[in-house]
Image 1: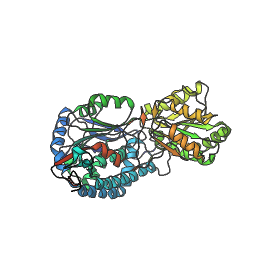
Image 2: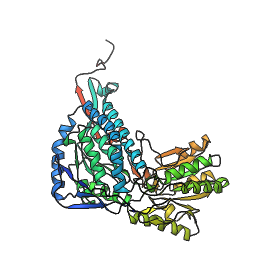
Image 3: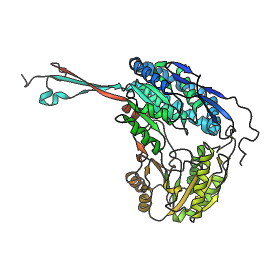
Length: 496
């Protein structure tokens, strides 16, 4: 079922969004409008940051870093725990914002806010775990008579550059972990989701996060570049495209970087798999958020003996998906982020078909809304296989040999996450060992993530791991204390 974009759309008040600079929301100045991809109307109007704002925010961040670092871990954890509960209370309002700004179905938006709550709760727990070590220096002769300690200290100023596809939860990861570690954070949200991003920050402030701990600067890539290059910034967490990530890295220079740069995730379906279950799972996870996820199912490789069975079952499951108004609770697939993104999906599917593939369902769009598309047997050099489509289309290909299909998966320049459907333990271990990815999901597609488990990739998918525990390692520095002439371990040269 498909509804036309904007058909009989009710009026939605435009969200007025400001920049949070030096403790105050600034609304006066140049503004940018966000047109909702489904409503086709302006849904948010946002104050754009300028060079003066960047300089003011950086000065304030540098001054504020010490105050945030002096907060006890218990105090930071308490704020994050309250924010976890408050996220659930504001769940419907936040999901509605996501639907309006991004065309994300409200049920996907509610799921994202549930993850925001989890992420804040995990960040709170990790704030309580930050500590250090007593080092065994007296085990070597030059260390006798000395005691050495370490502790993890905040970096100081963190920069969080967030993407449009999961703007609330990825902001929660970056800002939650940075605050848990005792840093102040400057947030550069995506232009496509300014109101959703600002709402998450307001939630944290309402739960007690001090204004010294966070600032928000809206704008285009020039704002991100200026912040990335600033000497006040000690660590940058970026999620986005490889091209933009490379630009951030060039601007940053010698800074700590955590980068998640996308993928074209593969899922392998073996002959012993539960084909019906695999088809249902891939249909559900290949088109959620219109496929706009870095680990969304993009390439499915099926053992040739079960290929026709899977393709038929998968196509039927995809055709069951409800496409339409993202504000309707029954909608599975809403709009993509904009018309250009939707056009890219359809174009790549048509290119594959022109090169010999077949489209078993979908293959067209209405505005920014793409009807979920299945492409059977796309060529290996098709853009649908080679690059990151980031949209509502999945390619399905047959394979004959398990080792060969692992090698085919590894030809990608990306390596974020993969899925594998099998009950063969040897194949599971082989795939975990051989696949060039940061994570492998067994009896699930590539598109599954737990927010308290490390997440990140290899090759052009980036480096570093997201998840509060692992991000705190990047958001802190190890400081060492040496006490000469004082030993916890004894300093006598013999037994006398």
